Length: 97
Image 1: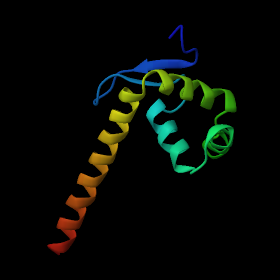
Image 2 (image 1 turned 60 degrees about the vertical axis):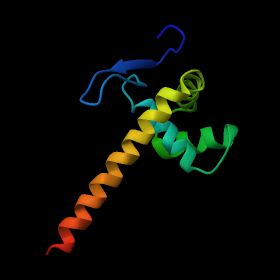
Image 3 (image 1 turned 135 degrees about the vertical axis):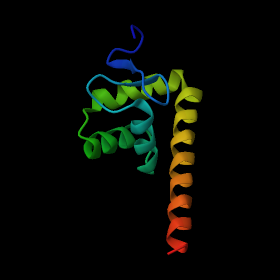
């Protein structure tokens, strides 16, 4: 946490995860940043705007991500896999009706 001020760690059902103090998890911000389709400062500003975070907070997240990309990418993959599985269950339930 010394190396990444503003980043805290939370325990939860899916394990320990990095997040902004009083804000979203790092993986959520990075996933949103990627979805902008932008790069560099444009992506940071756009992410700050849609997420109601400050540019400084988004930069803190990007700094953490740059040091631990495997950790954050794994969390994003996990979330995407869970969403895909939930959608498949929903589709199967609705076919049975």
